[in-house]
Length: 299
Image 1: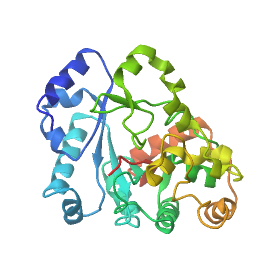
Image 2: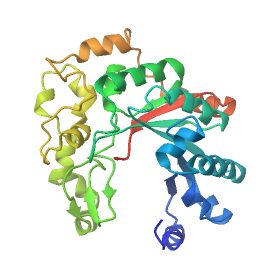
Image 3: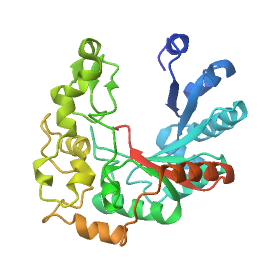
């Protein structure tokens, strides 16, 4: 952990910045109760349903650290979310992790592992879709941010996200539209100079663009091509040309329509916004298994 971590936290608190953090438990342990209460919410990484498996993946005692700090946050009234990265080693275990999250009255957010430096942990095409079919059948899904899954469920293209609603500032003092974006990124001074107009720069425009290979797909408007995922997996340059490996368009022609039929034979219209909020309150109150589907921090 950075030796000036607590000093940086104090600076952000003095400027009334809304704080959140993803932790394996160790960074939470370094904070006192007053510092911990300053967080709007906290996320804890949990990739396996048993301590032994979690320790093997994240390091010795990672499982017990995560458990103890979740309990501490609940005692202090800090909202907690459990975050799991979908990998080829745990893709059938995610509903079990949702059960653990439910016992703490917390939702589970599922991030799909994107291949940036290695494909060792990335799920295959078959594992990716089997994992989501299991999640959709065994949990109450609160929200879906994964473009491919949204398209297969008949949901419209999500608002914001990479290239539009988020800016990534890296420890190297660079700016990128997405954590998976290839290349060194633009210097931080660009963001300071243009502010919100950073979304009009070439990298951000490219992140919003549709890869040419996706043009024939009937679901291209709902999916948007999932350009950042395609780039991280193919190692492409800033011009998005590939298809995400989990896309049903991979292989011999586009199979998105058949994949959608297999997952959601009769796509229903999205629920009204108010019902999603009601469901979230109900799930937290009753500690039901729940899942929010997003993307992962690269490995």
